[in-house]
Length: 410
Image (tube, rainbow, N blue to C red; front, top):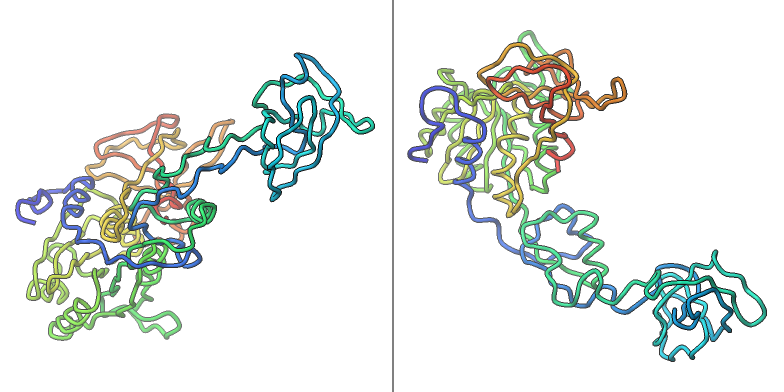
């Protein structure tokens, strides 16, 4: 990372940090083939081309009656029925001139038919049906109107979720090429940390970071190994990091990365590879680090629980998704009216824990009253993050960026 702007004195803009991280993305993991039922949340490794047109034949979009529109001669009329076609039937015989056929949604149109009249618009009488005037093509799904055979329907690098898996199944595809899950070693640093369920002594706290971060990483489809809490001793930290680096694609730790802070973690990283300490122009989460441990990428997060999770979602996420092979790693803040004032500009971009509420008939972004970097209750309450740019003031009603947490966790 020679020449990295974030290594210079002062605060590093968030967007610059993300660009610098993306420049260090390793080659995505190897490709493997998995069954569709195992592909949820995986990253597509190869583009998918349609093996057939969709629809594969002209078919009815409604339950009703298929006919030639010209047989009604521009007005309502009576046509005798020539049969019945249900979904799954093969319509091989041509529709006789001057006739209609009973048809159901998804059933193939018989040769010669060009329109469908919904069943609620007709009146049955004897061996035929009274039909209103219709236009050629009404309620017909044409062969290939969605896409033709050979069309690229899914690009490499997308995350496979419910819509994509349904599309693949509709094309008859049973297996798909995906990248092996990126393997992440996750650990915490700090003598004060204890596991949930253990008794606390004075000065000790429970380690929340590994639990929130592990959930976020697994939600992105990554394989996560819980490496526990580093001992606050140089040789032990060095040995633990060296072992983890030999087994995992990326290492992530929380705590011990503040500039000037005495911590064996930073020294161990320096001795095993390279260390870059950044002061990000972000609140919460100013201390952030990136480096390599025995050649393996390492991300160092702040220790405060909200700051650790937030910088993971905002700063580390693009790097991790790109390392998994994902093509679109950006996050998009929607401009929505602010439900609050921000009278004093700050040198750092603010990510306020917020919700959407309807006030005076208008959707507004409303922040939690408590914005401390250790207050997970506000993060749990939030639906998203209100993004107030560095150097900006804000009045209620003015647009503010809103990042939905659901989108950041996907």
